[in-house]
Length: 114
Image (cartoon, rainbow, N blue to C red; front, side, top):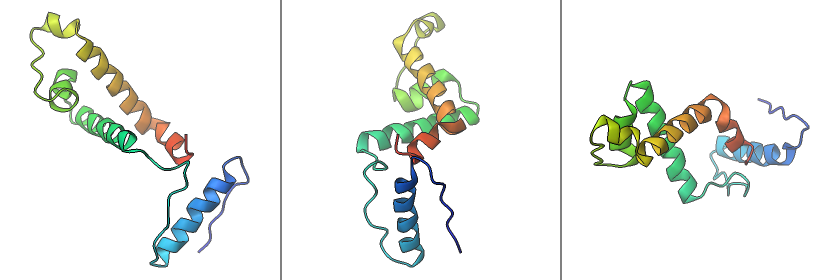
């Protein structure tokens, strides 16, 4: 086996991640995450929400269903006119957009510690 790392701005980060991988492959504790890659509890919850939103979109759920089931549990959006004018709809739309962008390529920022 071999690990090939590009000599770029993230080289030190990649070396640390590669060292953790080697330790894990040897059955040892990988050790602490590099500080740039550590995810806070808030970030973990938000990323989990985004993945759940993306999954619901893939299953064909409407924005109203996503809002009711994930973003605002138990929300009764009311009439179509109330929903269309609501802040909940706008936030749900932003989360849907962010979820799609994260899955498309945004996850790479996470892997680079950004």
